[in-house]
Image (tube, rainbow, N blue to C red; front, side, top):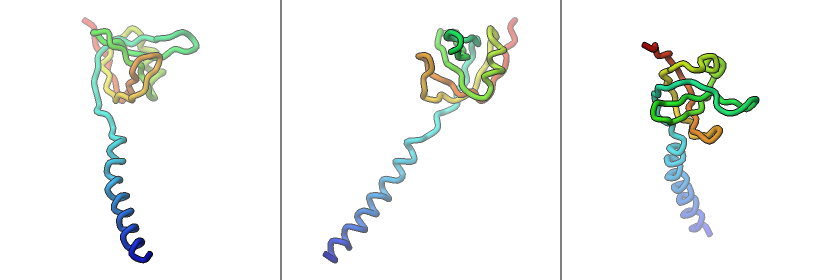
Length: 106
């Protein structure tokens, strides 16, 4: 019995130690991206979502603290920097907005 505990405990500790590095890598942050497109509201009241449509037709639902600001920029063209959140809203991928810039139209 003493031999079992001398082998079992170090073996269990080794498994815990080896399993720990992989667990941390599962939550890696996604890279920041930059997109340019026109701001619009998708959906119907009261379930609207601020979104950006790129020139190629790709749509991202926008998330973050700037929702009210972005809502006021409907129809404007913006450069938006943010991180893909991995979630979906109203059937499209979501982008967590970190910053944006209005594109001056010629």
